[in-house]
Image 1: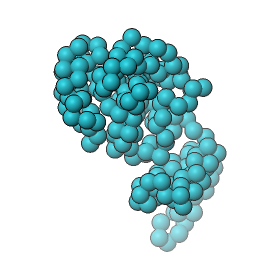
Image 2: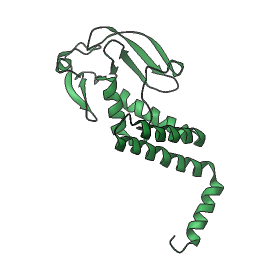
Image 3: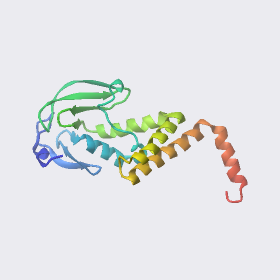
Image 4: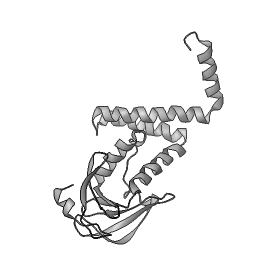
Length: 188
């Protein structure tokens, strides 16, 4: 996010944007409508900070065409002036405007919270088999180390915790047996 962004105008209200942060990521906010201009990396970092339990989910809202409806929109990019595309995530209340030229996104007021909510709901619906596959992918990323090792390990830990909870939820008999075992040990 460049310093000149704070002198850009809101694509809806045409008033000057003000520099701000979204969960530690630089952004620009419209003082009138509350819309937010932020780059792709900033959205991902803010999402990871907002809810560590979904940090392992990749947030590439504009890359999975089969899950999104993408169409032209009338708003111009506050960063470069190009026409942005509206991206709507099917089955959710998430819709953003994205600029392919400068890789930034315009979020209407409350859109970031809807993004995090949609990711939380996606995780909540994942069956244990999908969480197991995700844990294996995350473990493999430990070796590839695309992020710092501490972050990769945290991702693995979050996915394994979710997997444990999902397995126990999907298998109440197993949960009951584990509780009985725990009660019968002298350390329980």
